[in-house]
Length: 458
Image (cartoon, rainbow, N blue to C red; front, side, top):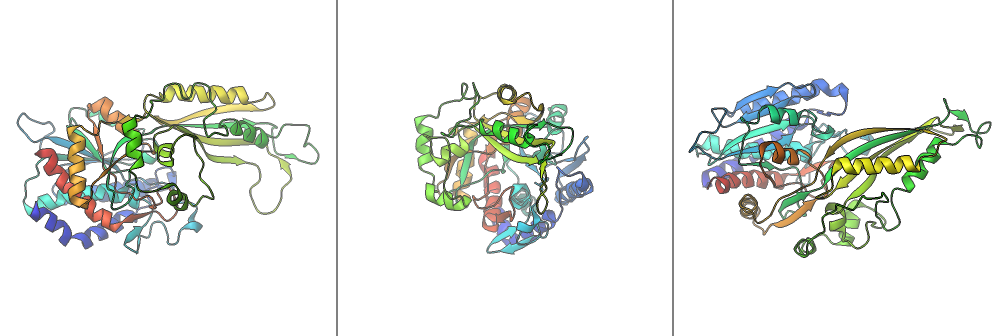
């Protein structure tokens, strides 16, 4: 292990250069104009894996490619061979807009104050590349890997992973494993490395209300026809109450209650309410009453408006009654909440609130259930030991507010639990302008990955 860790230290500068090259690809899966960039990015990662001698394939899908790269020589695990683990990640990134809020261009990686700034740096290129660096250290030093490792790096995580589930089903035997390692979450601080033992689920919905057949002069027609933008605002305003609870009948009926042990664990987390307020830049915090800010953002369900569109939004004034208005919503779910059931309940409530003066259309989006693992199990304990040794600190336990829907699919399809060892910091600006990745976490993340294979293979 000393040889492996020494190799990682000696190659830190090159690993940063590699990450910079990876980040230059504008691999935005949500925007069709970047289709060629997606393919080029997948090819870059595949070539990086092939250069290490990994058995690598770029799998075409009806969407964006999936890259697999394995240390195994055969397609199936034979009796008496090493344990086999998957490393899951994604090379696609969120849209970088609004560009004007970036201090430096989103696809021109820039190092400032010990961090690399670029879209995708934390979410998720830097995090899974750290694991590849760890595997490289074993292979280049001649130290035998205690486990077989297969990377599964997809290009559609940011748009719902539509083609990954069929891919897993088709290659169930080949990808059969003892567990899945995912670094696509975070930690409270560099002094508080974290095992994330729970994730919220997600379900997305877009709805549109249409009134007149065209935009109308607000002076001539205003007051005689209902305004779709006003209708939309009135519907949205009734989906949450003043206590911060979602005002949809039945929304909370399946919510799993937090245990006393979990609530005690939340109280150990380092970022207090005022520090969190400063971090997000809000004048004052708001959330469901009766829960701490940590619990509100990770262990309680929510309904959020992601975007509203209607009417004239250019410079100056345009006096119209807009023809239509639309909103995008996501609901974050906790264990025992069923995404399909929640979607039905929310759609039913919107229909109930919508007046007959407009036409309502609803469009379902991506969905995935919540996930929880027992932090006392062998898999979790191996992760905690690897975190402690690589970061030199006692790790904490987290439940993450974000969603990684594929985690539930790994459990369902491959019968494998996932080990969530995130390297992101609270101010890394995931999904926001000026996304960054702490280079100290990048280096320690590689060391953690190297130690993890020893712990899992032991």
